[in-house]
Length: 435
Image (cartoon, rainbow, N blue to C red; front, side, top):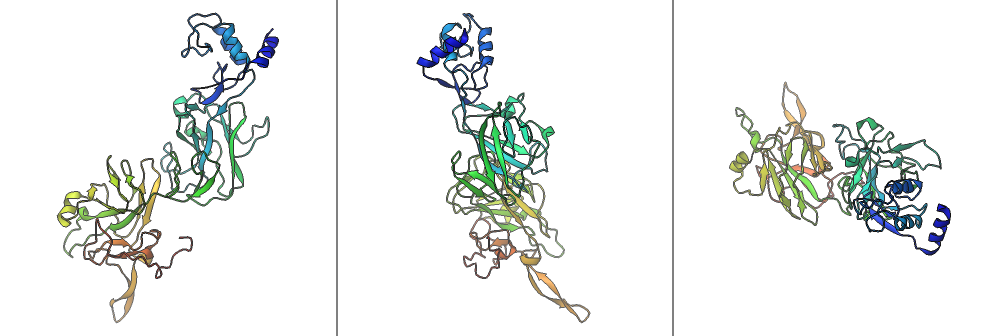
């Protein structure tokens, strides 16, 4: 008796769709909450048949908005028989060789591959029960496909306009957002998302990827894809056209002290410079390597501005009373022989990093003093305890090279202001061609 009713209704009534909390544009009649209309929905509707207390929106079986479940509701279900909804989900960004861009919160110290899913719709989407894979799958194939657990809605639900990271680390025991496969940095494979019925939602093929380089849509959910280098990768947030302009611009890692004096570590500082065109809110940002410090809420660094982060603001102000654009109070100390400093945003994504040293390309080789009638070579670097800071020469050139840094020439550095070593002529610098 159901089949004649279905045919007659489908012949005269247009197909209707409704957006609801399972997160897609789903057909009216989807009582079972799987964005399809089939016998599961008929069975669920039957549970509430002729129940006058069933009323929308609390009761999904009330399809027509009139309290109670009857033939009118069944008719609405029948007109969308065997139709599927449209999920408002896309694979928005992924990284196949995460060397240090973002740390796995479930496994500190690990930097696995990741896949970002974006919900561009107006309603939440729970991806629990869906499948994600590193290859395209044929009908009935289970090989290479990971089913996202469906019993962790707090972890697997993507809010409207929200982003969710799935860690492709081959370790599903770490949590519901960890797959049983990893991505190949060598490329020549796919990232694909399927619904709970193994119907394709979205997929992208990719070739070889560089370390700490992601690939993403620009703008979000668009058909245009780009490679994002460090500073442009945005796991868990909206993709951007330009990298964040905030960079490490000056380092006082070994303040001056006399031969018989102890080193005043409170005078150590790191200066940031916003070389971008837009102001940047630094609340929640921090240094994750080198020293430990988290920026308080409300701190903003305008375009072309400097900000000093001091080890001890009191000690710093006593040395530099005229510098007012300073915050600080970090834990730890900067190594006098060199180390890596990492600046991360509020999501833990590395924005900038500098690995400085007191020798090699960070210093100048000179003849040393006469020792037993012999003079050897030594490294000369006034920024290593002789009172000068280590300053970036040209902010428009990568700060990963020691050749783009120089000791300041003021006797104490230039915290909070233009570097004394500034020079926009990069001709003397011998840098990697890619930078």
